[in-house]
Length: 114
Image (cartoon, rainbow, N blue to C red; front, side, top):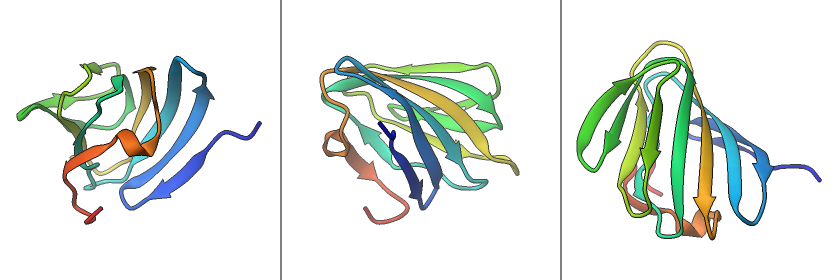
């Protein structure tokens, strides 16, 4: 089975593993770009920062993260990552919950009009 890979306006991601109970992605965020400010109703997320420097917004509070840092988002928590450096930010995202599709993304703010 070929796992999903996708180019996005902010960078790209690759699905590393997927099952009924979890999904694991590697995400690359281009310098200066940020993902939409979003939340999910059916999944929680755990991020492990591998490379780069980023600002993570969690329910309105901004925290600077770098390699080795982790961030957790419970179901319903607003979150986003913004690459504030000059190199790619790379992180591994582990999703747990009952549904992992794109339809479970509620975008509150998006730089790309999605």
